[in-house]
Structures are given as structure tokens and as C-alpha cells.
Image 1 (cartoon, one colour):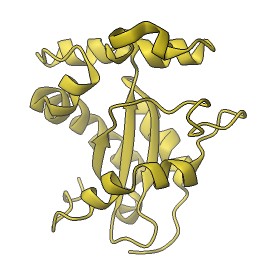
Image 2 (cartoon, helix red, strand yellow):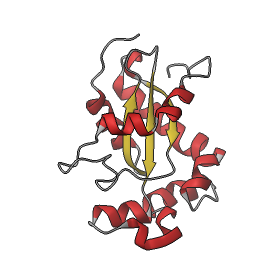
Image 3 (cartoon, one colour):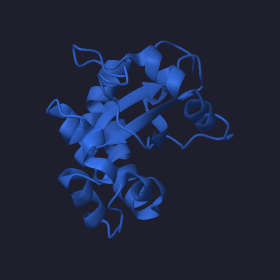
Length: 163
């Protein structure tokens, strides 16, 4: 409805239900509904959280970590990488969507519930200036670097209905 939302609070609720997700950032200021961008837990995100350089892992940096793999396997998804998870209907529709429904049920206010999401293909990190030294998301940098993805979530005419 265009009113301000407590994005950080909403992100904490979402993360509580989304074990496979490393970072979540809610967007939609001034929009008719909220969306979010997700980064999945990967071998690269685990390396980054240990202070290591994910690039040193080569292509393995995009392989799903244990929590993400567990979600894929639970719903019969063959996804083993971020790219495969991003396009897998079982991972997205049977794995993530019901978890969003649970989070939205806790959020209660329909104007603050998340209606769309996009799985990003790369992790947020301090090195890319998307995570601050404090560990908080650099919201401006993330919005700027992912403008096309954010715009794309709002180009479809109709948002998912409230659950």
C-alpha cells in the first residue's frame, strides 16, 4: 500500500522459516506489495562467513550447502547449485513457497507480507560492499546492484494472493 515497512523485522521473520537462505532483503518501498531477494546457503557463503575468499573455491562456491541441499532433497529437487535451485519448480514451489506462507502467517498484516521473491545467483559479502563490517546489509548498494531484478519482480501484473 506504499506505507513504510520494518524491513529488518520482516527479514528476521523470513529467515526463521527459510533455513536454506543465507541472506534475505525485503524490497518494495512505495510499491503496492513487498518482494524480497534471497541468497542461498552455499559452499561460497560458508567460506565467506569464515572470512575466507569464496572465489578460491572456483565453481564449487555455487554448490548448495547442507541446509539448502536438505530442502532440495526433501522435495525431490535435483538442484545442487544456486542456478539449478533458482530454476527448479520443486525447490521454489514445493520447497520455498510453503515456507513463505508460514512466515507470512506470522507477519499477519497483509500489507507487510512478501508476495514475490527472487533467488540471486551470487552471495552478498563485505568484499562486494553488500554486507557492512557490522554484518548488516548495505541496502542501498544491494538495491543499486540488483535494480533490474527488483524491477522485474514488479513488472508482472498480479502479486501472489495473501495466504
